[in-house]
Length: 187
Image (cartoon, rainbow, N blue to C red):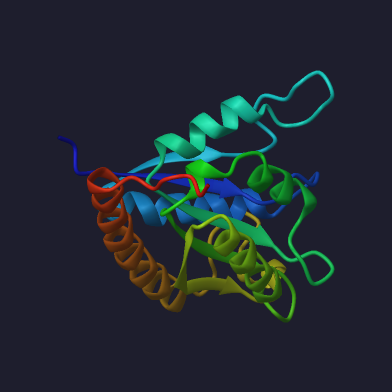
């Protein structure tokens, strides 16, 4: 049996010219340096949509089901998280249950933490486990160069290392728990 953790990297923004790509690329590089993860990008811009323009719920449910854990890369827009991320989260319920979720946020002065606090509530309702560890980038436009390189990477890399270590532990523990005793739908 493969012990690698299947990790879904969720892109939280679909805006034109989004900085989400820059942050997600940095996260991807960090995950690749941390052994034990198999990474899958879950980007609403690249997911299939139905005839009405909504995300294809069946496809999205399959993505969520096959992953053991998630990192959500989210900006903060107007003190909250973006509507496309809400659509993605609401497209499924059961596949989120008993899976850990970590957050990497970005924005202005708050670094996206107000969006993360709202997302913690949503994931709690989905019976997912939100991790305490978070990586946050304040004044995002000052943090990365035009080439996408983090200007002062040391603190962010340390924080990301802690986040990934904790996420790996939770993902393995909850995966084992789901295998031994699957969640039952409440009557």
